[in-house]
Structure formats: C-alpha cells, structure tokens
Length: 109
Image 1 (spheres, rainbow, N blue to C red):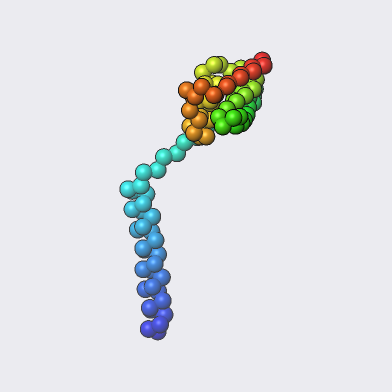
Image 2: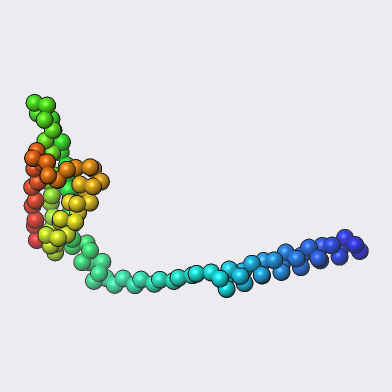
C-alpha cells in the first residue's frame, strides 16, 4: 500500500506542478497574436512588381569595373528601385560613389 500511496502522491505533485506552471505562464506571459489576411488583389499587385539586378565585376588593366544591370517591370516607382539598389550595395559591399561603377536601368511596364 505504501507503493500505491507514493505513486498517487507523485502523480498529484506532477499534476499540480504542471497546472501551476501553466497558470504562472498565462498570468505573467506577454503573448501577442497577430492576424494577417491577404486578398487576391494584394498578391496580384506584388506579383506585378519585379526587380532583377545583375552585377558584373571585370578587371581591365588592373582596375575593377562594376556594371549593375537593373531590369524592372510592373507598377514600380524610382523609390522602389533605389531602395533595392541600396540593399544590394550594402549586401555586396559596393561603393556607390566609385567612378568605375556603371548602372543601367531598364523599366518595362
């Protein structure tokens, strides 16, 4: 009987521990719930915007030349293209004030 009593006490202890832990997590926890609902129009607008950037680095006579080719299509503004170029400059450590940097932008609507 002592064994059954110990098993009951162990079960009750574990059960009370789990419940109290969940209670404190619920009481003191900072839970945020965010719901985003996308409609087909939003997705279609995102699909209509496309920016492709190609970077070509060549070395001629010991000088490094960088050609950045931007192909954009859809409903884009110059600001969108500039933001993407800034992100690429930071990612690939390109100095945008370099004299040997050549940028070509083609936009198709």
